[in-house]
Image (tube, rainbow, N blue to C red):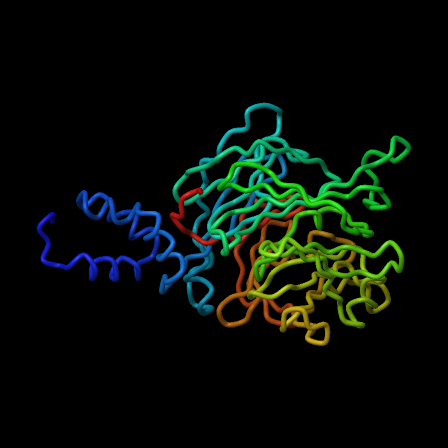
Length: 378
């Protein structure tokens, strides 16, 4: 194989079009292929040019005992496919101390940000290659946290928006109130392995978990917050290139729904920002009707539309459907506390489903989408 008649340029073009798992298997063919596959530039090109990117769903459990991965690439095509394949248990980096295992917080370009309770032992991990690095940072449950990629510097950034509280404040209020004198943004660069501080900005918002975990989209990290001055919900975005904060308004309909909900969660579905409104009562109060709204055009408030209505029995909170991702045909992949993973149409009707007893009674379904890659850490 060392004397293959294939020109190296053609070999690279072929490898770039193969799925990650196939490429990883080929590293054992010969030294030339090994050096090509583990070239950082090849890994970046494969991520940008892959013909068939492979996405997985990470699921973590309440007790932090394990993290599993599910691939839905085949099962999201049509109803006749097997749904879904068996979950794969992952070897997760162990925390250095404490009783709680690491859990996924956010994902970006094949990397997963892991942390244990209240942001100790923060680690960046690539589930595909197993490589990981512990970061010299910590945060608490009052901190907004996000993780993203700055393409202008080819760097991965951990963003923490910290609030300073007076001694009279309750340590862990139900809603985090940001009436504090000196908010601060800390940006930790994985390439430099060092933080930088941004201060002197206005951040007059309140928020509550799990919306403290920001979502990376369009070179910015997004959090769902509420204005202290007006009690109006909105999305705050931190641009990783400009290092600036901007506000993204919700539509009038989304604002009105905000005051009717039990909870509201920010998601990214189909490459768009979305809101999952949880717990609407209807028909005499004997049922619930969750709603999912999607912003079809980024930063355009009038583009928010209602895409899914998910129904259930109000006496059984297990019937809430927690969105995971959109399938290729526009259906919604969702999970429930009774252990079911389902494919739903826009009316909440089940197209197909699978029961996983390992997910049963999982109090809050922790699902994170990540894309397979063998990108190296900076």
